[in-house]
Structures are given as structure tokens and as C-alpha cells.
Image (cartoon, rainbow, N blue to C red):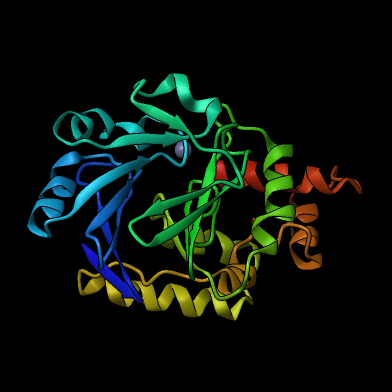
Length: 268
Ligand SMILES: [Zn+2]
């Protein structure tokens, strides 16, 4: 587990045991001890942390309703007074002890404010949350990657989300994603852009940390723009590389994104 502290808040990042590299987050207000839990997988480490810190869970926020992001909801509801916040399109996939959270809504946790942004693509109900200089990006954005489209995903929606939302976020925002696939994402990025120095620098840094048993430091939106192939899918270098692998690609930009996604899905 890693703790990130800032003015009036704390963030605990927990790698959920026996998960698909899921990250769970607890965000708390240091003045009121109220907290929110984001995408709980295993309730045990979350509840232990909350009890040890004398925190009070106000909300469970689900960025989206894939099973590995809502698995810990019910066990936490059972032992706390909390309720779930989820996009209306995901409401019927979680407990009725929930409330609709729309893009544009602001959530209050103690003195903290979290702003929800609707980012369909990985699935229709996906939301990301901005709290000050921090972004909880769920499966919309990973370090050097994005979520796949295998479970209710839509490529054209994800392209719109990337162009109209993700790429317009402030460069300084720190990214807290729903999963950690950092090394394989960066190796894939380097396979497409072997000369990308930012990608190789980041990969080396993460490999070093991992040898010491440490997790990667969060990236920023500015860094993602430099090495995340899904934010760079329409850059001349990546388009050229994709055309090399599939000469049938024409002028339609979305087809390049789809090709990139296909390559990543089949990449090991
Ligand atoms: Zn997902």
C-alpha cells in the first residue's frame, strides 16, 4: 500500500490481493475523517485501513460496473452506513443502496470535492473523478494504456472520450488508474515507437522500483501524452507504424485506433 498526502486529504492506494492487478483507493478528508472508497475489490484491506485510521466511509464510488470494480461493494455496505455512487447506466448492476452520479456532478467527502466526468468507451457507464490535482481514471486511462473494449466497450465512444476529455485534461493531473499494467503497456508502446525516450526512461524507472518490491509512481496527464500510444494513436509516427503492419489502413483516423486496440489485445 502507498499513501499520498496533500492539502487536507490523503489517498491510500491498495493493490488488491489475488486480483488482475487492481488498484483500490481510499480518499479521505484529514479534517473530518470522512472517506470514499473507489472500486473496491477485496474489502478486507480496505476495512482494516479504515478502522485503523478511524475513518468513516461515506461513499463507495464505482468508476464502472465490471465485476472486478464492484466486487467489494456489498461486504462494505453490510458493515458501514455508506452508499454507492455510480453512473445511472450502471445502477442496475449494483445494490439499490446507491445513488446516481452523472458527469458534471460534484461529490463532497468532508471538505473535499470530487468532480465526476462521464467517459464512455471502455463501457457505457464509465466515470472518472478529479479531486484537485488528482485523477481517478478507472479503466479509461492506465499508465501507458487504456481499458479494452471486450465487455460492453465501443471504440468510437472511447475515441471521443480520449479526444474530447482525456487529452484536454491539465498536464499536471496525477493519474490513479484502476489497474497496473505499466510494464507490458510500456513495452507495447516501445514496440510501436522504439525511439520514444520518455517511454524507455519510464520503463527503466518502474523496473528498478519493482526489483525493490515497490509500485510505480503515478504518472501525469502530461507524461501520458508523451508515451501512451492510445493518446498518440493519430500521431504521424504511430500511424506510419500501424500502416506498416496493416497496409489496408486508409485515411480514416478511427480505423487506426481500432487497429491499435487490436494489436494491444493480441500482444504479449
Ligand atoms: Zn473495466
